[in-house]
Length: 142
Image (cartoon, rainbow, N blue to C red; front, side):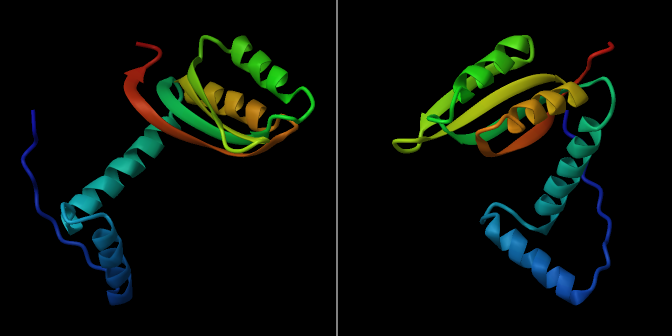
Protein backbone atom coordinates (compact mmCIF):
# COMPACT_ATOMS: atom_id res chain seq x y z
CA UNK A 1 0.00 0.00 0.00
CA UNK A 2 1.52 3.31 -1.12
CA UNK A 3 1.65 6.22 1.29
CA UNK A 4 0.40 9.65 0.44
CA UNK A 5 3.20 12.05 -0.44
CA UNK A 6 3.78 14.85 2.05
CA UNK A 7 5.51 18.05 0.99
CA UNK A 8 8.11 19.79 3.12
CA UNK A 9 10.76 22.36 2.34
CA UNK A 10 14.47 22.23 2.89
CA UNK A 11 16.81 25.18 3.20
CA UNK A 12 20.46 24.80 2.21
CA UNK A 13 23.34 26.94 1.00
CA UNK A 14 23.25 27.68 -2.74
CA UNK A 15 26.57 25.93 -3.44
CA UNK A 16 25.32 22.76 -1.73
CA UNK A 17 22.12 22.92 -3.79
CA UNK A 18 24.16 23.29 -6.99
CA UNK A 19 26.20 20.19 -6.05
CA UNK A 20 22.98 18.34 -5.24
CA UNK A 21 21.49 19.29 -8.62
CA UNK A 22 24.58 17.82 -10.31
CA UNK A 23 23.95 14.59 -8.40
CA UNK A 24 20.30 14.62 -9.49
CA UNK A 25 21.29 15.07 -13.14
CA UNK A 26 23.76 12.15 -12.92
CA UNK A 27 20.99 9.84 -11.72
CA UNK A 28 19.10 10.09 -15.00
CA UNK A 29 16.02 11.55 -16.60
CA UNK A 30 13.61 9.65 -14.37
CA UNK A 31 15.04 11.30 -11.25
CA UNK A 32 14.20 14.66 -9.80
CA UNK A 33 15.16 16.37 -6.54
CA UNK A 34 12.33 14.74 -4.61
CA UNK A 35 13.13 11.24 -5.80
CA UNK A 36 16.84 11.65 -5.03
CA UNK A 37 16.03 12.94 -1.53
CA UNK A 38 13.79 9.87 -1.03
CA UNK A 39 16.65 7.62 -2.26
CA UNK A 40 19.10 9.23 0.17
CA UNK A 41 16.68 8.93 3.09
CA UNK A 42 16.03 5.25 2.30
CA UNK A 43 19.79 4.67 2.07
CA UNK A 44 20.37 6.31 5.47
CA UNK A 45 17.56 4.28 7.05
CA UNK A 46 18.94 1.00 5.67
CA UNK A 47 22.38 1.89 7.02
CA UNK A 48 20.87 2.64 10.44
CA UNK A 49 18.86 -0.62 10.45
CA UNK A 50 21.96 -2.61 9.48
CA UNK A 51 23.64 -1.36 12.66
CA UNK A 52 20.80 -2.53 14.95
CA UNK A 53 21.37 -5.75 16.94
CA UNK A 54 19.19 -8.68 15.90
CA UNK A 55 18.42 -7.38 12.44
CA UNK A 56 19.00 -9.81 9.59
CA UNK A 57 21.14 -8.37 6.81
CA UNK A 58 22.28 -9.48 3.39
CA UNK A 59 25.73 -8.52 2.25
CA UNK A 60 27.83 -8.75 -0.85
CA UNK A 61 31.55 -9.00 -0.28
CA UNK A 62 33.63 -8.35 -3.38
CA UNK A 63 37.30 -9.28 -3.21
CA UNK A 64 40.24 -9.45 -5.61
CA UNK A 65 43.25 -11.70 -5.26
CA UNK A 66 46.05 -13.44 -7.12
CA UNK A 67 45.09 -17.10 -7.38
CA UNK A 68 48.77 -18.06 -7.37
CA UNK A 69 49.11 -16.74 -3.80
CA UNK A 70 50.27 -19.74 -1.77
CA UNK A 71 47.25 -21.62 -0.38
CA UNK A 72 44.90 -18.64 -0.49
CA UNK A 73 42.05 -20.40 -2.29
CA UNK A 74 42.15 -23.24 0.25
CA UNK A 75 41.97 -20.69 3.08
CA UNK A 76 39.05 -18.83 1.44
CA UNK A 77 37.19 -22.09 0.86
CA UNK A 78 37.80 -23.17 4.46
CA UNK A 79 36.31 -19.91 5.78
CA UNK A 80 33.30 -20.22 3.50
CA UNK A 81 32.71 -23.83 4.58
CA UNK A 82 33.06 -22.88 8.25
CA UNK A 83 30.27 -20.32 7.79
CA UNK A 84 28.19 -22.28 5.26
CA UNK A 85 25.01 -21.26 7.09
CA UNK A 86 25.79 -17.61 6.38
CA UNK A 87 27.33 -17.91 2.93
CA UNK A 88 24.44 -17.96 0.47
CA UNK A 89 26.46 -18.07 -2.74
CA UNK A 90 29.71 -17.05 -4.36
CA UNK A 91 30.77 -16.22 -7.88
CA UNK A 92 34.36 -16.50 -9.08
CA UNK A 93 35.59 -14.45 -12.06
CA UNK A 94 38.96 -14.75 -13.77
CA UNK A 95 40.29 -11.24 -14.45
CA UNK A 96 43.49 -12.29 -16.22
CA UNK A 97 46.14 -15.02 -16.01
CA UNK A 98 46.68 -14.34 -12.29
CA UNK A 99 43.93 -12.10 -10.97
CA UNK A 100 40.55 -13.22 -9.70
CA UNK A 101 37.48 -11.44 -8.42
CA UNK A 102 35.05 -13.15 -6.11
CA UNK A 103 31.62 -11.97 -5.00
CA UNK A 104 30.37 -13.67 -1.84
CA UNK A 105 26.75 -13.24 -0.74
CA UNK A 106 26.29 -13.40 3.03
CA UNK A 107 23.22 -13.49 5.26
CA UNK A 108 22.83 -13.17 9.02
CA UNK A 109 23.06 -10.78 11.94
CA UNK A 110 25.01 -7.66 10.95
CA UNK A 111 27.88 -8.12 13.39
CA UNK A 112 28.44 -11.74 12.34
CA UNK A 113 28.30 -10.85 8.63
CA UNK A 114 30.85 -8.07 9.25
CA UNK A 115 33.07 -10.47 11.21
CA UNK A 116 33.02 -13.04 8.38
CA UNK A 117 33.83 -10.31 5.86
CA UNK A 118 36.72 -9.07 8.01
CA UNK A 119 38.05 -12.62 8.31
CA UNK A 120 38.05 -12.97 4.52
CA UNK A 121 39.44 -9.48 3.91
CA UNK A 122 42.20 -10.12 6.43
CA UNK A 123 43.32 -13.34 4.78
CA UNK A 124 46.88 -13.00 3.48
CA UNK A 125 46.77 -12.66 -0.31
CA UNK A 126 43.44 -10.85 -0.58
CA UNK A 127 44.37 -7.61 -2.35
CA UNK A 128 41.27 -5.58 -1.61
CA UNK A 129 37.57 -5.83 -1.07
CA UNK A 130 34.41 -4.18 0.08
CA UNK A 131 31.30 -5.29 1.98
CA UNK A 132 27.94 -3.74 1.10
CA UNK A 133 25.01 -4.41 3.45
CA UNK A 134 21.26 -4.13 3.13
CA UNK A 135 18.42 -5.30 5.36
CA UNK A 136 15.96 -8.07 4.69
CA UNK A 137 13.36 -6.26 6.80
CA UNK A 138 13.28 -9.13 9.30
CA UNK A 139 14.45 -9.48 12.86
CA UNK A 140 16.32 -12.60 13.88
CA UNK A 141 14.59 -12.60 17.26
CA UNK A 142 11.01 -12.61 16.02
